[in-house]
Length: 407
Ligand code: PMT
Image (cartoon, protein in one colour):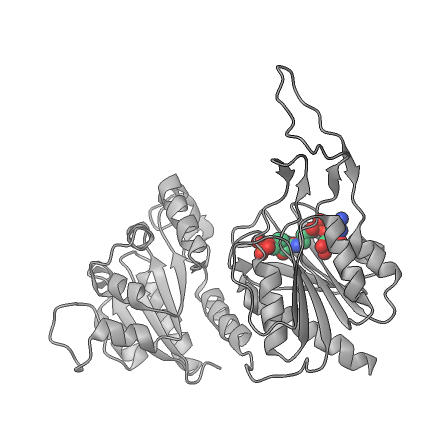
């Protein structure tokens, strides 16, 4: 149910606008308080009266008409929204928002909101596939907006391909899942007294005083886990590679490392006191065979750098597990389930969190992740795109359950 949730629904001008009526009706029946904002062109497709009747609220469309309340309407609505859903979203709307243009009631309210923006595009397939539209979508995703991707099929214009508004059922399901996942009790202290070690960020393997090998990890996933675990009462030791993001507050201990060898050494020093180890750091599998303490001079030909294998830290910890809960991550680009399942066994993990690095909004650097969690007995739970803090809570819920089963 969506009781007490205020959802602002933006409707832009496309033939799929009539389907937004169904979305509004379904959300209303689930108990949400709905406010509809229509663009001028949306009104060419559906009458505001339809949305007014379905939502039981005035429809807002004109920035300059007599206000219905004394407040500045777009600011008040922006503040009131628990979620902002734009359905259907045209290429024009996406382009405006991606470029900071706020020239009507809908775009100004979107700009003024602080709640999550979810956009369900619908347009001609060539428009949707146009690199300009795709760039705008990628830009908005990088700002944390979520997209409900359009389905493929026969479009109103007669073309066949991607661009059809996703099923209204699925859009409503997406909204329900969003609020389910948000239903985190901030006062929950279920991890009180537990010592949890979290690894985060990239490792750096130096070649000479100037160059090194590293990877694209920003640390956001691990820092989110550390932050949520601290909030839920755990004593958190965060062992982190170098990052540019702010350190979570309320940590028990913070240790910065550079190389995979440093990481291994620091984990081992803390390991005996830990109840749980969550390994989200992106650890280099190889390091230069030898380190040159002078800058390697360039010559005319190619340069070959020989690499030697780093220790697989997770695998080593798996050998000395001694009743601790060990959680690994799997950063994959293909054969996700097979590869992740193999890693669980090899590293003696309780479960593994697999992220598909080829998906937009998953893996490195983004504020969101799309994960599958695979248990030691092979059970698989799939999650939609969630904020990394929400993924952190999903992981910690599972840790908490395993620990309570051990009691
Ligand atoms: O930091 P962000 O930008 O937020 O990105 C998050 C992330 C993509 C880095 C994170 O979600 C993630 O997937 N981390 C694991 C990256 C990784 O090293 O995956 P892997 O499949 O190569 O390794 C599997 C597991 O073994 C991992 O838990 C890893 O920490 C561990 N490992 C790997 C190599 C090694 N030599 N020693 C290890 O312990």
